[in-house]
Image (cartoon, rainbow, N blue to C red; front, side, top):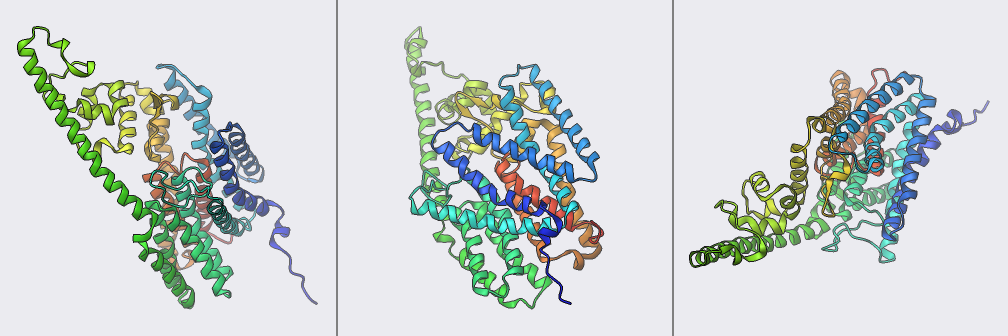
Length: 495
């Protein structure tokens, strides 16, 4: 009697298909968002799509879950955090309420989707291969979009000023770096297991995945290239040394891209940045020298004129403080927004009276310092539950910080940051626990690929604002965390 092969997807129903469609729809939604922004169309349609997707995921997760109390507990925690955040804004005055709460929901998406994907995995184990396959096709769609942007000469470049880097029709380079760094190791590992009898196609897959990271050109993308290539080679050495041809192919592709560093967009852009830094430092030195000259001239005029205020240049009084005086022009030029809102004395003290270009032209530091000074002027409630998003814009410039953890602190307060850190820390603790107990059982190629994706995601959380507060990127982290939970369960035979 012959047995008919049954597709695992038809056996378990539509849930794996649902998550697969979710995965491959992400780059398509990003392309839509890019063109909406590029054509200056209202982003209401993309905002509604993102929130609708979150609602569908949450409802599906709740429906298939057998532990619905987790959802109610999570909803309670988020409700308390939101109430605390609203309470913190009542003192200084709540401005754009809708936009501020929508921003909180963007932050909440990652833990919500993580819990839902865990529920999907508990309900149907075939969700995991569907997610891995989804990551694979996700990468191929991104590659196709980038090729189209090149053919149509519409690539916006990773670094627009220097016209370096292949970004494709994706709007935020740091988020794209986070997406590719998270998805590439998972996609390559899936291909190694699925296409190992087709070495040419497998090698091409390696080239595409690592090539996208190389072409993007951010520093963290290059780090992701190294982590994905070398991390999977080392994993294969520990897990299955019989796949020598695969290891050699992956090692060669990785080394070739790493060796081509002097030709990379990242290298060329960093060279331009270094040259501009020298010019900016000379400009700062010139401003400081000019300010000293003007102060000396004013002193000479004041000796002969009983009303020296009539002769002072630039229409503003000179600073009597010998440390502040020379800084006026330089700080006005590079830190004007901070000086206008908080005063030169506070800003100069915060910067240690520095005239180094590495301090004054550092946009990341500028934004953090703005939020830090703003937080100092707010009550303790803001320290606990965060600032309003609208308050991070001053004189038309957005001072939202470029680091996710700083961003969570300034927008959700110490309470929100603590909750996020505890949530993220729980997953590596699970990994270490099961590896210590039985690393041979739990250290598989697919587990290693998700582990690499987690580590590269955390580097983006630490160094950029491209992961936790960007729904288009945070959903990839949710998948990775859910997979880590599933693969690190004590009894892998239990569903």
